[in-house]
Length: 306
Image 1: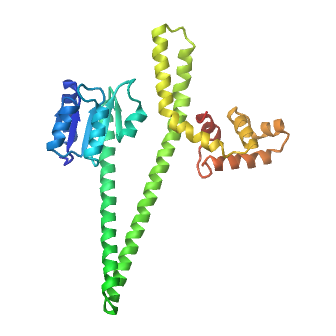
Image 2: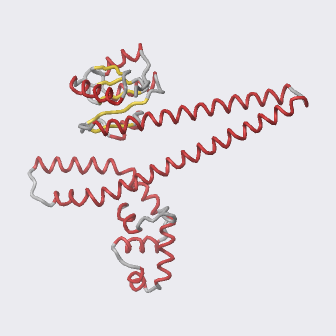
Image 3: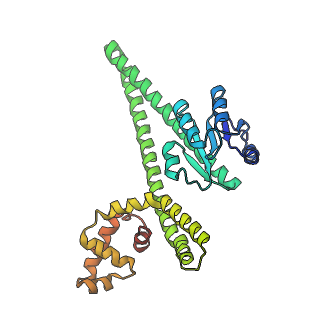
């Protein structure tokens, strides 16, 4: 199916430009233009309107970060996806704060590009729908004010009809707010999953590598990987620090024992308390961690926040 989404690709590597154009064509995107660096992209932006820009970071003349600033200044409704490998000049947070909505780590696969591009397009469609609802609500409110100010008793029925339409729009906006709140919760849950998977699937192997006899070059690369990983997961780890601040001293002590794999009975014996009291503390900890209605293992959750 042919797409109406217009896309600009900026990269100084002609092979990548050709590869991405072929990928996008296979996805059904025919409105695609190419730029060999940031300045060429700016020249195209002066004559064309694009829904999405896919740009590399490292380019001559004007790099991707400066291109992002230019786009957000002159065409703020254009969404930006960034392609990047390891860069010591700009961090992941720098790129997102500058205004990029998505990023791809080079090298990436066709499926990765398609999945992330489709997510950006879905969000654009959601924003467009929300903007349409807001415009409609403003129009209804304007008509309602005009009816109240300029009409008398003869237009009472019309006013009531507009009130009902306003109520329906408010219900729609309430539903949209619920959807946005759900999306934010999903993002937090995704962060929880990322932290847990990093702790369980990546950290053990990084620690294993640290304990082996690596040469200086290998140690330097491993340190870079470790630092970049910490940079990526640090926003999720900060959420746990905020949560821990809400625990009482006793709850913090019990949480640490739970992380060590101790049962309620073992903790009760150590703290000279009853298992029932420890179970109450566990319930309070789960509630403060946002796990009251979830089936997530408490110990696994606490270990993912270390």
